[in-house]
Length: 253
Image (tube, rainbow, N blue to C red; front, side, top):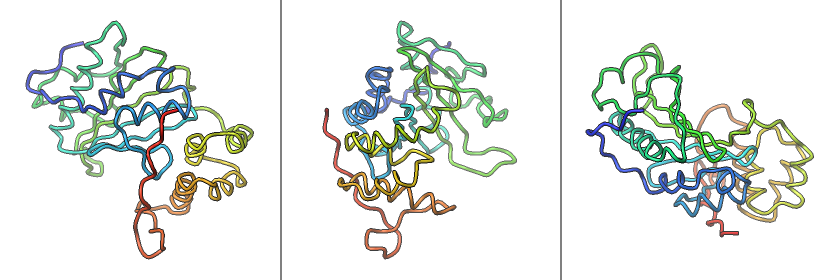
């Protein structure tokens, strides 16, 4: 793997660096409690929606079944290339921990203005991938112009998942969902609210949970399920679009 190009000196955001430093199956991707604790310690702020965290300029989605994390950045195409190369440089500078591979082009060492950035079908491009600590880290970039497709801002997607997660994810488990509902912590239930295909009785119980953070997450999930267009959830008073205030930071275990 080639070194990052010298004309891309973008620093790695602190929250991303801290996340990558704890990216293993035992520290970050063990369970809901580990996810929430590691993410908040790394500088990510929990939001209303289940599993969603944020920083000033990035979004993070996470799930506890199976544990995984996805970080997203959108912006200027050159900035996205610089950020992606900064992530690649950080990971590849630690060969004792991370093993690199890709089935596609290794763009980590291209100059920012290399014509190859604008060639080919990036929607079908294979990610750069690193393995270590029983996790797989995948790094994708997308340009802000895709010939023949809808225009969209350039974006970066950094995915972290357990190496033992099945390709199609873990199957629906209603018994587990009810156990989490009965005996799980607030964090467990907050993550549970974001899972797909929950039994109706579990959804109803989450919407009536004694903790306001769980109720807000469950209500937000219902709002999204019942609508086919993207938009902000209704305000707490029902008067037009809005968003409830973010939940309090989860305390460490």
